[in-house]
Image (cartoon, rainbow, N blue to C red; front, side):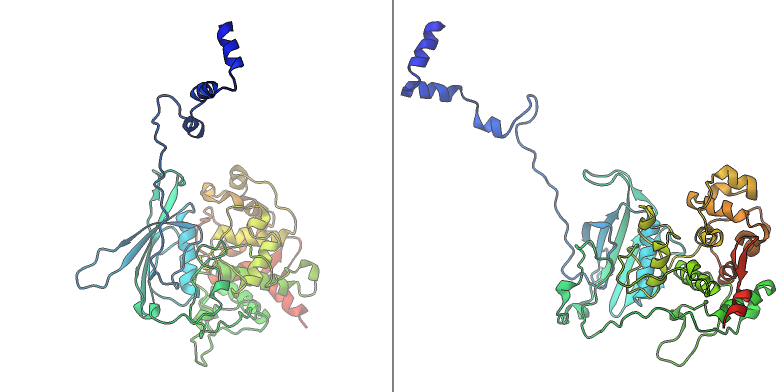
Length: 441
C-alpha cells in the first residue's frame, strides 16, 4: 500500500494519474440530483397548472376577492339554448361571508335580482344586467378532501353565465383601465365597468341632519311612536335611497317600522343618533372617517355612501374590525340583516363609556336568566352583561321587554332599532331623544 501511494504521489502530474482521479471522482449527476436509495431516480414532474378565466368572461361579474379559480367548463345545455359557461372557485372563507359579499355587490351595482338566498348561509343568486344572465351558487357543503397545496376546508363557489356577446363586441373605451385594479390585484373587490361614457359620480354621504316626517308611524307600537318621532325630528333616521324612485319627484315618507334593518342602516343611525344626542358635547361624539382613510373592511370602500360612518365606528373601536385586532372581521357585510346580539355589541359601549366587563356564558345566564345563552356569540357576551347594569334603562328591557329567550340571531326591525337609539346612557345618567330636542337650538 505504501508503495502504491508513493507511486501515485510521484505520478500526480502524469496523464495516467489524471484519468485515475477522474474515475474516482463523484458522479456530477449524483451531486446535482441526490437520490435516496430505494426511491425512484426520476425527478417528479409537477402537474399543477393555472386555470385561466375565459376570454369572454364579462368584467361586470363580481369576483370574490379571496377565491381561487379551479375549473372552467361548459354548462349542460339543451341543443337550442345558447352556450353557458360554469366557473368553479374555492375559498377558505365561510359561505356566509361569500353570500353577504354577492348580496351587497348585486344590490349596490343595480343588478336585477331574480332569485336570492333567504339568509347569508348558502344558496343561489340569479341576476340579470342588460344582456348578461348570471347564476351564482354557493353550495351548503365544504370541500374536505383537499388536494396538495389546498386548504383543508374550503367553500365551493359556482359562477354560471351566459356570455354577453353584445358587451364583448363593444370597443373598450376606458383609456385608464391600467389604473383600475384587475382580478389578479389584491385590491380588486368587484366588477369593472369598461364603458368610459358612464361617468361615475362621487358618492355624497347621506344627509341625516334634516328633520324627517313619516306618514306610517301609526303602524309602530304605541309605546314607541313618541321616541321614533323625536328621532325623526332630530334627523337621524335616514332611509335607504333605493326606496326612492329614480328620475321622479316622488319623496319617500314611510318609515316602515316592521321592516328588517340592515347593518349599514343601523350603523348610520347609530352614529347620527349619538352625535345628535351629544350635539353640545364634542367629547362624546363619534368622529366620521375621511375618504382618504385606508378601509377597515374589504366590502366598504370610500365610494360607499356609508363609508364615513362605518369606517368611523371601526376607527373608534366600536365595531369588530382588523383595527381592533379581530383578524376574522375583514368583511362588514353592510347589507346583511342586523341581529339582536349585534345591536347590543355596537350600542352598549356608547351607553357605558367605559371598558366592558369580562363575561362568560355562566355569568350572563345567572344575571339575565336566558334559556338560550349558549347561542350568543362570545364577542357579544360582555356587552349583554354590561347592559344588565342599566336595569330598566337597559336596551334589552326597553326594546324587547321581559323575556327569558334572547334569540341572539333574530333580525331586528326598524322600530326596535329606533327604540334602542332613543336613549343613550346608563340607569343613573343618560339622555333621551326628547331631552336632546329640548337642548337643540
